[in-house]
Length: 275
Ligand SMILES: C[S@@+](CC[C@H](N)C(=O)[O-])C[C@H]1O[C@@H](n2cnc3c(N)ncnc32)[C@H](O)[C@@H]1O
Image: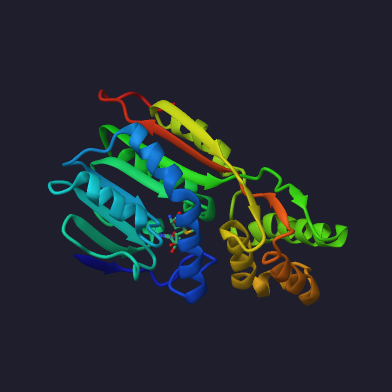
């Protein structure tokens, strides 16, 4: 089943429905799915459970959850663009803006959102809504990139290293401010979960080194292609962007990728008072 309830306007600054957006979410799946499914396995996803997957992107985690919860469970899969999420038995797909609230009522045994809330200015309010929608004993799992500096390990020239740092800096200061992205949120989730009354809160950080031409650098390149105009308005020159795009294909370039922080917490089986 696919349900359409798209709001007239939304704040997301990338476009999953576009060709570049599709590539972006497939890079994310390659980089992060093994980690995410390991975290979900640690929590324990079982047949018959009802799950909510927010910002489903390419849909790989929706499909993984459907396999784990089937044939008696349900996955409600939500995104602004659901072209890549297939409605199959046990999967309800909703084209929906989460700023408008949940498309269907809880309770859910698991709510998962990867690389979504860092993009949404109303993230704290939305987290509270998600906590309310959890079943007693249900888990909320939030994963986002953090602001740890992306250290260059090797680059063909010192000028290349400076170009990389400059584009990254503008993207994570000027651009983040412009579009409301938070690079500090990933490390704030733990406290917000505690404030909302969740227990058994735990987190893990993950990062890796990436080289030009491999998935992590192709993702960096994809972001600047999608955000070209905004980066120009932030003061980056056309020449710098051209060099950056070439550098992301250059095997001699190596750097630490983003730090991915995943935090999970559980709703108590008995209701507790919020702080
Ligand atoms: C960075 S992508 C991450 C996709 C996927 N979760 C992953 O990690 O591979 C963010 C996704 O959230 C969706 N999204 C952004 N704002 C949204 C909103 N307000 N409501 C629902 N989905 C939204 C986008 O369309 C996009 O597919």
